[in-house]
Each structure stands twice: as C-alpha cells, then as structure tokens.
Length: 180
Image (cartoon, rainbow, N blue to C red; front, side, top):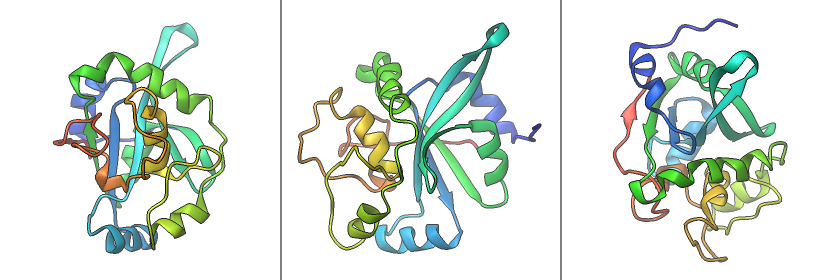
C-alpha cells in the first residue's frame, strides 16, 4: 500500500529512533471521551521501532496497543490516516535513556498480541490503575516497556497519553515535533 505522507514526516522520518514516543491527537468519538477525562487533546501513545526487512530495506513501524491488541504498524500508514483525523507528535528519548530505546522496544515486541486492556481503561476513567502487563492500553504499554529500565516502582500508576512526557515517566522530552 502506497501512502502519501506530509512533508514534516518525510523531513523527520530518518531522525526518529527506536524507542521514541509518538503521541496522537484525534477527534473521533473515543478520543473525545479520552480528551474530556484527561483534559488534554493527546489521546493515544505509541513507540517507534525500526525493523530491517529482507534486502536490507529498513521500515519504520510503531508498536501500539489498539482495540485489537498490542501490534506493529507502519508509521507511514498511521501518518497518512491521521492527516484528516488529527495530528501526531514525535518526542525524543531523553539523552540518558537514548541507548536503551531498542531494549524498551524489545519489551513490547515480546508482548505483541497482548490483548487490549478495556477493563483498566474504563477503571482509569474513574480512578487510576497500576501497570498490568497481562493486558495493556496504549500509554500503559509504553510505560510498561520502560518500567524496569527507568526504575519505575511496582505501584507506578499507568499514565494517560498526555502524561507520557516530562517528569512523570521521565523518559521523553516534553516538547515534541508535529509530524502530520
């Protein structure tokens, strides 16, 4: 499938590293509910992942927990889909964790296929939940990938997508670059 991508994604694509954070801002019904609860327009989180394919062709994917579970999707396809639906932002890993991006991505790769955490997502809208690796919603999955690397406590509360940057998780730069 060939997809058209905006100039900003094409400009930054080769600078995105495995483990970097991709945040989404959308206006669909589920995203509007997330926005209402979190008081933020950021409604989804995913992790960038470079994969070498046959013939040394590298493709940029994202590891993301969506309604069908934790999966691997082409970032270019997600960028093209988001053009009319919202925006996407790329957040770099902080310098002290940059070399650990592949390790964090590997945690998610080992868990591809893990079911989406519908129950905790609903509970999270009422009260906060801790990370449960048996089922994962989007920002919970990314936090789970960094849990041991960043030394997060066992009772670390799963972040909202809007809480993935800055001090709370402590892994990603606060300011991101719009790629759609």
